[in-house]
Image (cartoon, rainbow, N blue to C red; front, side, top):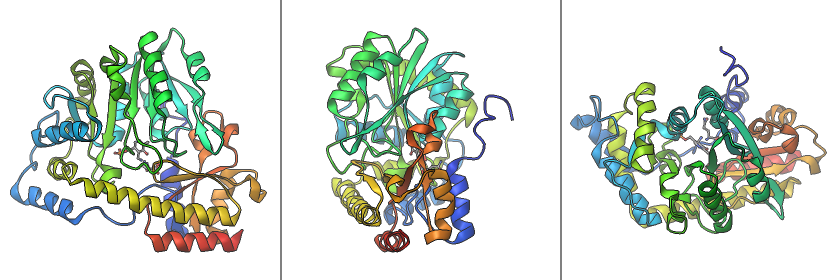
Length: 387
Ligand code: PMP
Ligand code: GLN
């Protein structure tokens, strides 16, 4: 393994899912639903396969039906206008979108500001592109992980090329506010930066609302040409294995990302693209029900964790809860997570792995709640009994 990747090893998700399998524990570590998404969408994939739609190489930017559906979705939910031919690119999940964007836009040595804790593929993506990551740490403040805008401004140097955002934010569950996003938009314009914004949890918001950064284009002229928005079907439709993602941005940026994507996967798998095009057009009730269902699940797990003595940072979005295990007398989240299956048959993830400076999160542990209600209730009972 080369020096760029040597520090990354096996992802925490693989490690913790293997632990869950070995021990038979309830897996609240890796974030994936234990129930598949809508039946009709699965049938749409089967139909595409059977009808021979997408069984041979689909077009590089993605099948036209999906590009149109992505553009329609951005307009319907966020009032954003994108040309499906020049401003939408289909990728192999958000993960490829992130990697291709970083590979396309960074010169070696460029600095990337990322909100810490960060999703693990950001650090590896920046490293593969030869960039340098500069963390700006979200810190608990009045029950929510908050971005310090002064710290963010201070992190910008002449070498800063882009800010890598994630809202709703994995693993903290924070949803960036209107004021925070406006400040980021202003900073990007002022300091001539690009912003890559990972919005894969855009529909999973329980308190407040998700605001796409690109929506601030009206207030900040020039912003539209600086923002690359990334999303995917995995979380919104509960088919994380399909790996259909997309990028929406101005033509020059989409074209740059496409140059990298061409040599990563060339094109993304065909039949699922047709199915996701149908999924994006589901009626509003689908999206409202998804949110209501997950809010209920959040509340079951949060209540269980609180009763067991964990400090809970109530997530406004995503399907993760970050907790502090210090009130339980624990000193190290990694040790805690390794021992948890033995202690009570539950698997979780230590947040320290999402930090450059793990001291900021020595005792923080993440639990996923995208599981059936009875599974969460059982996990809560086990945790309450053990602690
Ligand atoms: N970004 C974040 C913040 C995520 O949590 C995930 C899901 N693991 C991804 C990107 C990757 O999404 P996909 O599965 O579509 O590649
Ligand atoms: N995004 C998911 C999580 O945070 C996992 C995705 C993965 O395993 N790479 O748990």
